Image (cartoon, rainbow over all chains, first blue to last red; front, side):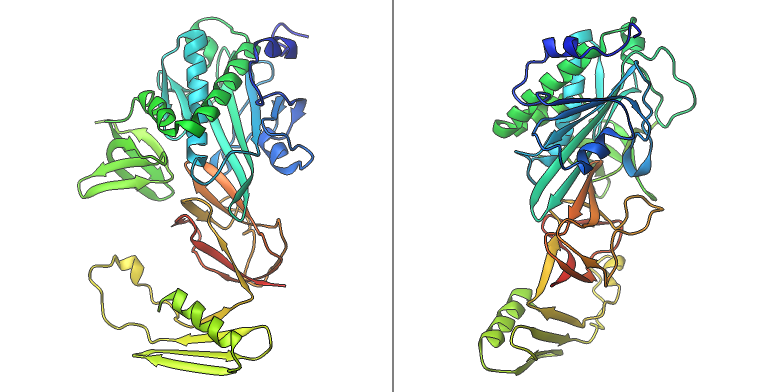
Length: 261
Length: 152
């Protein structure tokens, strides 16, 4: 057992939730935490958290990969089976990145920038990524699985990645406790889920205030579609409003980058 | 043609003793015929509008076959969210379903993606896919019909 081995009891001490993480599943290794929660119908409890040390087939958007490192990163997924509907699903999605951002601020006073829709950047480098996957039948959300990857204690990164990565350790200056990071993210996420029920606008405002690119000129790429404009705001559904010469366009999907002028 | 009017017409014919009903309104012809006790078939034929509507974007002017069958035994799968419709899990993967496929409750039919969230839509009916109403990788609105399933 190395000094970095994840200790459940240390996470549990700091966990202060009613339902997120009260059912906690740990796998030494797993193909994908998202995939397991989506496909394993024996796991039903609202708020179940599944953590793994070795994820072999980390998934990103449209088949992109998420690379995790044993003992150094956090790779987990949260299962929601209640309280999510068509009206608030996008706010839950943004709320996940907000939970990670708030945790970084609370614990390590890091200056976090949220990149629409849900990447977490520090100094323009990616410290955490989120992939939400869900299953609907008719109008009902049967399962919503919030997959979160956080670079915690990696000292260096090798290879060239889509967005240059960083870790909490690199930004904070020394290794931190992964148990503490996880419990804080789960605490924050539950309190955001509760706020969504009564004050979804407040959640959007919190997200907005951490998005440094609002007001900046950005490029939005979606498949072969490439748009340039001013990142005006996010609307009440969380969609990006891109201001162009001929009016404002609502962006549903796409990769946003700052346009260098 | 107003779809609700059509639905009402189908219902009227269905509940009556009429076995065949047709109506013409300008170029639009509607024929509803009943060939069994349960099902009602509707055939709409309408010539493609030759008038160019300059206000519409070019892409919206693709000529579409205006022949459609409406069957009361058909079930619509609608989008629960605003997003982009995908027929396959990844750009190079096989499509989840094709016209003619038999599906059951819980079969994955498509993905609708919004803000990086990938939502799998499962069938809430048993039956056969008779029509896919949306092109791959195009935007869909909340509650927009995506598939027509003939229930079994």
